[in-house]
Image (cartoon, rainbow, N blue to C red; front, side):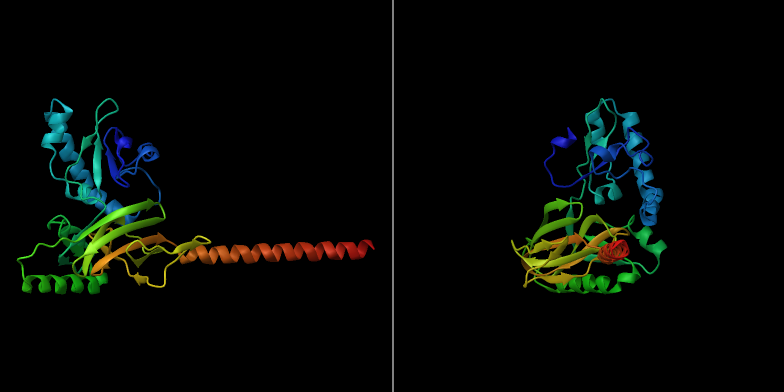
Length: 288
């Protein structure tokens, strides 16, 4: 049933297994759970402080419900599961999945900021604010927090009689590349339901419908592209400043360490071939 969903990207919370110690659901779906020995510490913190508690809330609903429909109707708002775009909840192999109607989707605009001065304050704030329109920003990205705060002040002083029609949506998904089409009436911040990992993810703003080309595994943007800096929001998610107007955000995983390793590997291979050729040449000279 879940795989019939044609959406480009969403996540599944599987409660029919040991959620954070089974890798089986990850074979079929992008999951909120699963197991990895190299799990990011920030994600583990999120599990311990919020997701485990939200799972307990779902189990309480399950225990008091007679049908899957009742579970769906009584499903509470799960802010962290929802910001991770947890669209489906699996209750058991013989039961239909429950749809989380509160799932945020792949990306959304925010106009308010909750700045945090310490990591403890940062993780605490995501449980206290409305993440639909407020981004929690740590002090290591103060520039982003200041932008959102100033942008919000401009909104408050502007004419409030008009309704903002800005939109942003995922148009392409691959493990190493995401593309988002946007139309924004002003420069503003967008949060993406993707894990922030600075060592390799890069982003460019391209004109609407424009796309560069990929050469040797590396994205070559168009001449009109502008590279943008990604920052962390809501403890663990990616975010970026989106300009006014229409365009496309191209986000790719291209770690510099991979390029360095590729160059070293190529140089080593060439050196090895040269050594083999020299050794063969020396052997031929001795044979003669």
